[in-house]
Length: 278
Image (cartoon, rainbow, N blue to C red; front, side):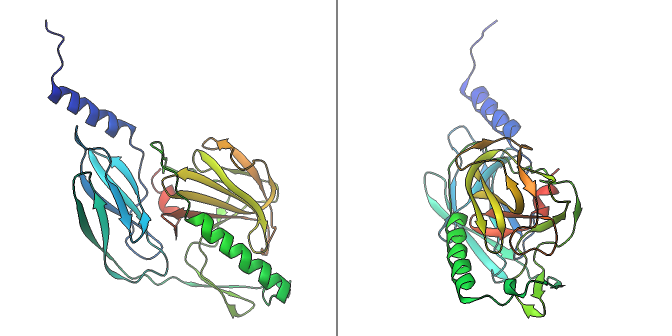
């Protein structure tokens, strides 16, 4: 019996292996603050993963059911309507159009006893402005890798409270929308990495309090805020479900909880879309 394997069999084996290694993708939601899943093309023996950009930002490309899929984060301030991706499959560059619908998020009114967290003193305002600029830069981080896992675990065990996209009012003052998911947990509860990755940054911020950023690769980041304690350092590799800190109410918080954000190609997106992949 011949043991020779033909090129077609090798190609089929490569496709099956890539598909087997593919992780569960987040749920699709083509609205501002959501995620668009755009099929780019079939996985073949001669084509590696295509490169994809949304505007000037590179985009995560994943394998699913024998196809390459662009996993595109849609910013909350993205206008509804028709948009396009730029796709380079190694031989030519094309555009792929997709539509984004409108979504109206509910309002949330929060009362803070510390009015200094609402109407900022000049020194606090300057500090907050500098920290926002630093976080904006972190959101643009890109590390190419072939093992990005988007099948997230919930980072804490508790009741979901303030959801993503809420239009927030602090002591009656309009503020930026809520760009994360709040999980109500007692102070000192363990906070876990939603997936494996590398610790990109840690800090103690005016609004976010003690915070950890985890880089999952290819523009997918997660952020854990208001921690009471941080158990990791910049550059550490963390496993899925590994404790990275303990919950608290540092920064601007009305009670102990975890604020969890997910960033995809520079856009803050709804973390619940990643949990629905489970």
